[in-house]
Amino acid sequence: MTDTNHGFLTTIGAHSPEAADGQATLTMDVDNRHLNAAGTVHGGLLATLVDTTMGAAILSLVEDETPATSQLTVTYLRPGKPGRLTVTSKVRKRGDRLTICESEVEQDGKSLVHALATFALTEN
Image 1: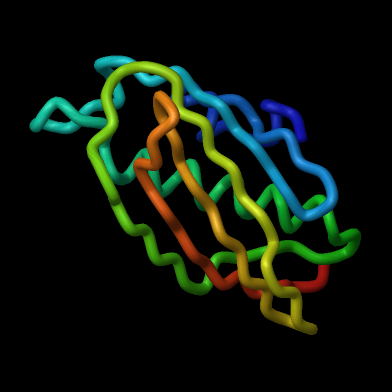
Image 2 (image 1 turned 120 degrees about the horizontal axis):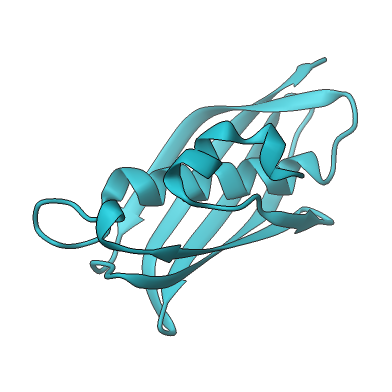
């Protein structure tokens, strides 16, 4: 994946995930631009990062299909702060038309987010 394919990631200051064999990783340095009114990393940013990284994990396994998020559950475990985030995602189960992925966001060795999603696979 290249950043030119992800205009939105560029807008939020993230790079494309590295993906292979149904797994993907994305690292991002967050700063004050990414914080909510409470001074912690905005939940919408975290949801975007897990969704993007899970999609990349799926894309590493398919050729003529495109994943579309049909359900995303994000569990926020602790607040994030400015600094480096690491997002890891893995395809857990692939069906004919639906794929299940799981993702974690970590900062300073602690889990901030656990996410589970179902993606529909559409033919190109």
